[in-house]
Picture 1: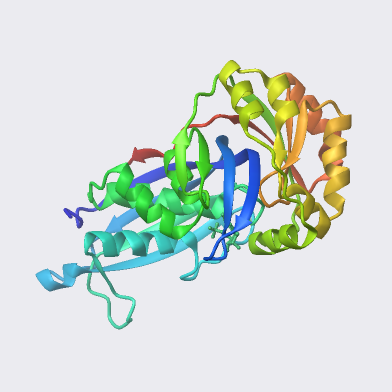
Picture 2: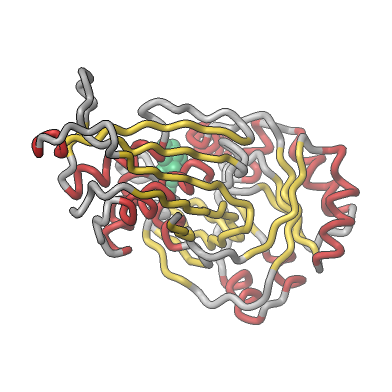
Length: 320
Ligand code: C5P
């Protein structure tokens, strides 16, 4: 690692939507086998990473230890402690590239990396907000610390951090299998206009999976119709093909989601679906103009409504 050159990096990282999600059986590790089609969406968080060497001792040994801290602003409450996914990603990258940490405490005499996260992606809402932040940290710190790990190595680290993190490192449109960490980019034409209906109530992903197992909502749905719609860039066909096996479980835990989804459909959405494990509900609109009208029509049903486009690219690095 080059690692102690002061600098600043800003990374914008998009949220994801599951255009198709089928949940299979429970594996030995407690996770479920999935088949899912993921697409990045323009709603994004921003991570600023600053490497500050000003307080570091001149003694070369001090440079083996990196201080790390995180601050957060924006929408929604996320933990800033060690279980924050951006911090966990930073620690994973540190151990991969051999940077020690000052986690034991005491007087810190090494360089300090300060992370500042601006949240825009709804928290615990089925849009991979935490996973996006982990991906942003991997990409930002790989750059800031001049670690030069290629995306494949980053994706391996990502898979350890969460099922959606490898996709968030890549962005775009992908078919994911296994626990969600095996991803392959798929062809997607067109631009899709979404109304993102945010509900402040949080749904715990493990709880939604448990409800799915208990309620027995497994289907044998296939992703072909979604993949075909994406290949041809047909928004109407995509709207009709949207599918999420976790939707019934999310609606079981939060029955108000039924009326929210129906409101989007009644207001003219081409399709409407719970996003991932919820409780965010997505409505697909036929055009940018229709998205504005749809958002206005359903605004009163949600705590917040956003308009977003898909597909978005992967995490974007801007050095400052
Ligand atoms: O991987 P991640 O931390 O995002 O997953 C959150 C939770 O979702 C897991 O703890 C597990 O309960 C559930 N999950 C699952 N099968 C998957 C992915 C997630 O059961 N393939």
